[in-house]
Structures are given as C-alpha cells and as structure tokens.
Image (tube, rainbow, N blue to C red; front, side):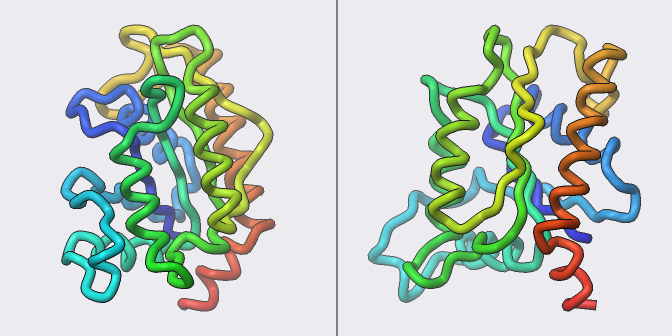
Length: 189
C-alpha cells in the first residue's frame, strides 16, 4: 500500500509535518509513505494544460502511483493554505484528467488555535468531494498543538493525544481497505 502524504505547510519546522511523521510511524508498517513535494509547483495556469511544467507532471505521476492519500494541513485565514490548493488544482487538471479520483483519503491537521484546523478541513473536504475522493469522515481530528506535543522525528509526547491519533490511524486504515486502497495496490502488484 502506497500512501501519498500532502502537507499543507512549507515551513521547515511545520507542526503539520511533525504530525505527518507521527501518523506514518503509527500507521501500518507494511505501508509505504511518500511525502509529496508541493513547494516547487508554479501557480496553476490553464494555458499550460497541453504542456504542463515538469513539476506538475511529477506531481500528477506521484499521485497516480499512490493507493491512498493523507492530507495534513494547517489552517490559514479559516481555510486551506494556497500552496495546498495550488497542488490540488495542478494534479486535478486538465479537466477529465484528475489524478486524485477514486483514491481514499484522510484529512487531519494541527494548529495552535483552540479549534485546531476545523475550518480548513471542512473546506478541503468540499474540494475533495468534487474531485471524487472518498474521505474518512469519522473520527474527526482537530489537533490542538502545543509546544513539545510532537517531536521533529514524529514522537507524540502526550499519552492521550498519542492514543487518539492511533485510533484515528486505525480508522484511516480500515477506511482505505474498504474504499479501494487495497484493491488499487493489488492491481499494481
């Protein structure tokens, strides 16, 4: 099983990158987790659909090679960061060549705000629904970040948070299995 991880933050010390690393460590050990680079993408421009830039072709290939998707995003101004939206627009275009279609996804994020990334996740789910991406709805996970909660290596230091995230990852695995991730992996084998 190959899981493409898209982190909506470019910051080197990103809390969401730390969360993504923690989730990969908690996930099934027989899964392969690939962090997808999105910071090098030029802004999506429909004029380039016939001859997309190399970075766009790479992104589409990496998404198409994945069996499942994991979106880990901060919340900027009550929505998803522009860099993540640009990556989604790039990989889902041109019309009729949506690289995300049918791939099961998990949506999660962390923030220092009291409601975590609730609004960003809702906006992202709306976009993914349009793109035919089945998305894990329950349990929801709005992780309130505080200093030291997750180490750079992906160790969760709080027992309750670790248990909650493990529960979320277990639900994500079950969701991926039910919604075709295992079938996609087997068809490539």
